[in-house]
Image 1 (cartoon, rainbow, N blue to C red):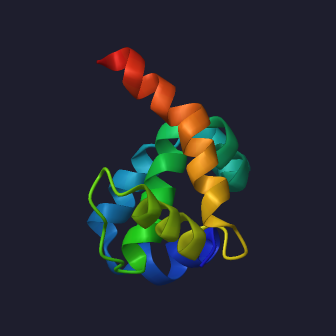
Image 2 (cartoon, rainbow, N blue to C red):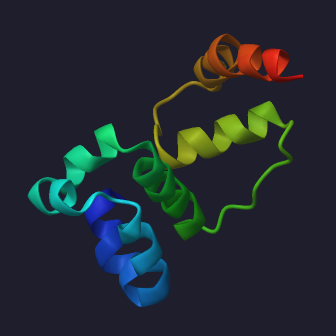
Length: 102
């Protein structure tokens, strides 16, 4: 499902949730280019990404189940993706932030 279908087929059924998600977008930028908003607004992009996952009703893995997270990434965002590409990116980009935070 893409962003347009997400609004038309999923969020339209839940006006309160749609309002919350829409509230994360900047007013003028969203009206002029809703797809551009996904590239410049991390809060809005994160909400849309989460809605895409939630719409599929996929059971979520444990937070430390990296392969489980990789499967959701592939299923939701990159059907041709390789699980090892996700895990490699996670080890390169996310793991160092977790190490510094502790």
